[in-house]
Image (cartoon, rainbow, N blue to C red; front, side, top):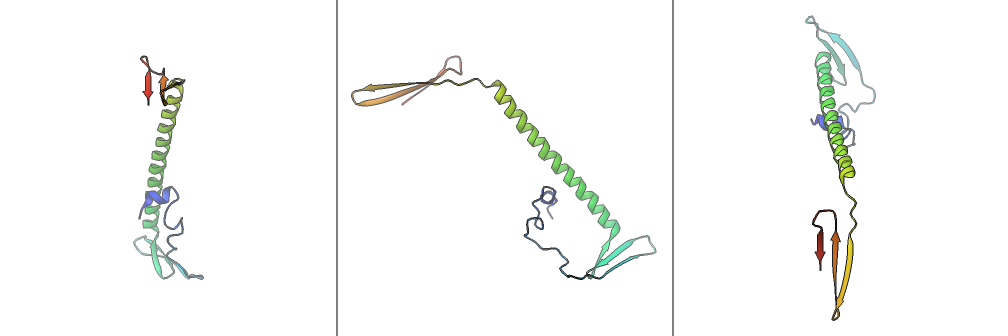
Length: 122
């Protein structure tokens, strides 16, 4: 099972790639417990341990929280990087020069974003 996929809403059941395990329309259920204080639910011919289910739910919640936290951290890192780029980037004002000699046209693009400047010729 890929709990990460379920945490962000792209699990097999959430996307329709897998149907639920119980497909009966009218399911008979029974709740019972043992002398060892174990509780069970019988549903659709299957038994479900309440304790194990509760532990699995807590584990799933922990995975969901870790995945949500990692996605939130990644989004924040991307936002900070984009914000820094926007605030530190200089405005680029390229200058284009076209030269025509003996039927051949050449160009030169100059940018003043660096101290020495950058040029491209062709």
